[in-house]
Image 1 (tube, rainbow, N blue to C red):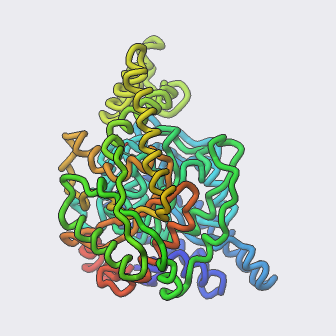
Image 2: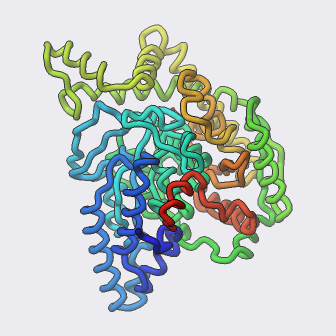
Image 3: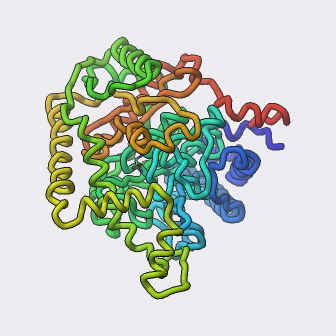
Length: 515
Ligand code: GLN
């Protein structure tokens, strides 16, 4: 039994103690591996735990920390704060020599021959990669039920979904198996599961993080981002220009991501004079009353702390869903053409080339992926391209123009719900794809516009977490983290902040386990 309390620390607290030398990375990694090992049969958040690799990386980090401590304060300060801190990766990030299934049977058995850019960056920082996390197949879904390796459970209620597609990444952090994890967000797959699991998740501006070595879903939308209780330092580690992704932006990554206000007073001061827009279109029909109530309370709290609240309209919001479900499947149908049974993983070889191709794809892809490939192929086919794909791209420009107008009129950030509902029971939306798609109504337009958005916990509805979405202009991640930190400061005393996800209590209590 590992009762050390170590799995309850924030990444920042771990980092401080590692530098002080009163905690080793190896101890941290053992505590997290033990918890993950024990609880994964119930959660199914991890598709692979790499105990041996993690222990080696932890020992390396401990050696780096020891050398730096001997050399003095400047050497310690030059280490990235992630040095020695455990992280988990969504199973679509390439790690040399490891699996990379993207939640699909078609990539079963495939071994990555190289590291993704962000894997290299994390290794450089000294972060310890614990393993790979469950996800909807090729990141298509909102519940992680489309994984070929079974669904992940929500730590708040093991009978409910954690959201998706990065459900394993969100559930592992909510359960304390890792303090930090990486997900990807194409239309909501970081923000929505963060909301449903009661943690922080940020989708950066399109281009902030290199996609090199990430399994592609929809290349003009996909972005990598962090999940955490304190996420800024992980973004700092992975962001920045990479020649191997021509869409990664040649912009500096602010070091102030590592220096968010330490005190609540200083943090809350950020709100004074800030103009926050509330887009009324985001309070969509069908939104759960408990979700709307929490979001309205959050807005009232921000106003009481000195922010100016302005009603705004983003009139093309309604088209976010329809245009996304043309553009994303179109790009997916092209990206997924490479899974032919010759180059990657799963292969059926008992006929001629065409028969093998059809049998490999027929048995390798799940139903949702096939649906997307058909939708996308249709939208791109001769005669329909102009009517669907080109039209959707034009409407995408209008969606972006709505945001540009709001920010151009002096709005610093937009405040909205992340998801219209809290976590739902397994199976509730599985037979109704459009109901599943609608759960992303509040995140899709932000993705279509390429903007950054963060989801932060804002209380509970029926005992389940509600997410507050903060949306900013391009490259405003630092401002979003400051705003998020300010909201945390003004709600620091809220009773829901100290709650542990109750779904795991039953697993932990009988054995007397304190994580
Ligand atoms: N749920 C959306 C979809 O199914 C978004 C997924 C994502 O962001 N990867 O496409």
